[in-house]
Image (tube, rainbow, N blue to C red):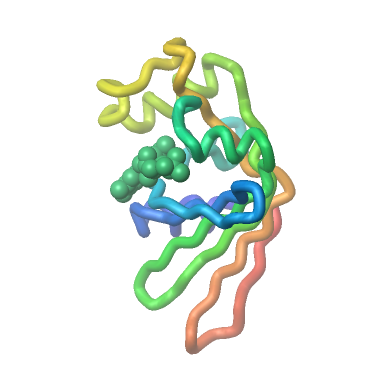
Amino acid sequence: MEKVLKFLKEAETYYLATIDGDQARVRPFGTVHEFEGKLYIQTGKVKDVSKQIHKNPKVEICAFKDGDWLRVAGTLVEDDRIEARQSMLDAYPSLQGMYKADDGNTEVFYFKDATATFSSFTKAPEVVKF
Ligand SMILES: Cc1cc2nc3c(=O)[nH]c(=O)nc-3n(C[C@H](O)[C@H](O)[C@H](O)COP(=O)(O)O)c2cc1C
């Protein structure tokens, strides 16, 4: 998981795909954080992306960096503890103007049953499960 976290942080932006009925949806995301040994992302409950995740938590993210790309497919689980949300906000001071751990909007999810695949045009894929 450390390698996945490092790649996503260095890429800065990843693309999060969700399922909306029978339609795929994708958008840029940046938050990624390790808390209690799990990989977390952050969003807001008011967003469509949040509603899609709650309805169907099976998502995939993709990021690209230095000729390599990473896909992480898995199930997102909401962690409703204030300390999990606060830990994320502490890692992203820039979010603190928009989000508070107890604002009723901020939410964090961790990846469960995740399969991460590192790919490139020149090397064999590397699969990491966490
Ligand atoms: C570089 C970048 C990083 C972003 N990171 C996040 C993020 O980590 N969490 C989030 O909720 N929105 C993030 N956003 C904003 C979402 O992409 C935006 O709110 C999007 O419209 C949400 O998807 P939805 O419209 O399907 O709800 C980011 C936007 C950009 C451009």
